[in-house]
Image (cartoon, rainbow, N blue to C red):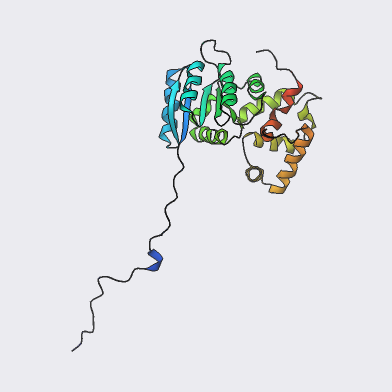
Length: 254
């Protein structure tokens, strides 16, 4: 008599919906190769640990002076540098001087400069030769590692970033003057300008302001026109738009 309850096949056919994907898994981007320059040991080592713990950065060297920074960059050729503005021997603007030297000798290396305070004179000095591959952030961003990483990736790609709080200082100190370039902008254009300085794309600005991308593009183009920014190759106009008005007034006293 045939078995009315056959034993299930112990090797059922594989479910085609569960078949392994034959495509190779996407490769994780290589970590950014970073050199850090900061004269305070705890800040220097803390920054190193924070970056390396993300898995997105490989700190090649952490040094304490501008001279050591330039030497490390020449030897190791990192993707990006993180440097304090004030470093030995003078504790003035050694970090900015080093940033200019690095960008001139190694245009492919980005530099993020950190400052304890939002100082418009530092911004004017840092960006006076152009903005590509440079970022100016407040030191407090070290604790906001995602923001610091975003800045590292931006300058490594040749773009620019300015800390939003620094933008507020820059705008507030000059926009009140009747002949200041920013006085030509509408309130909405100023809003767009703030977001531009954070390195946001037009789409990201549109999402933040709840406007269409085409509307943002119109505001961006209008801002460029009012600030007199020409189509200059190798100049990142989106951040230059924030800093353009500084060219119309000499920096104040330190």
